[in-house]
Length: 130
Image (tube, rainbow, N blue to C red; front, side, top):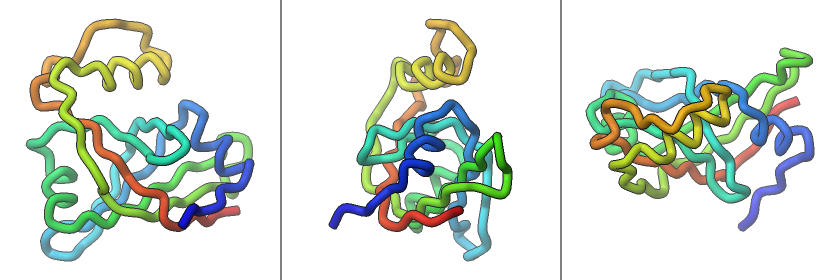
């Protein structure tokens, strides 16, 4: 079933804004980190490396929550809840380069950890906000 996403939420998900990604640690406590992201109309995508805690968290529990604040009115936001539904290898760091350019760091240079890079795909199962 498709989830309806308001114009306001779509706008926030299309801008180069930092979001807060929440995952669940193995001890069932939350972990929240700032993240670059891209939204392709179906999935929210993140670049990550396989040695970090967030990646391990998602391997054990694929539940995710992601929030983006409206920079014009910080009391307005969008929260997306979903889960990790896929992962794509990105050994050249191409998606990282795409995101760094989106976020204003014009460069074609991949990160030094490119060999460990993956693209995480988050489903959009519930959208809320104001």
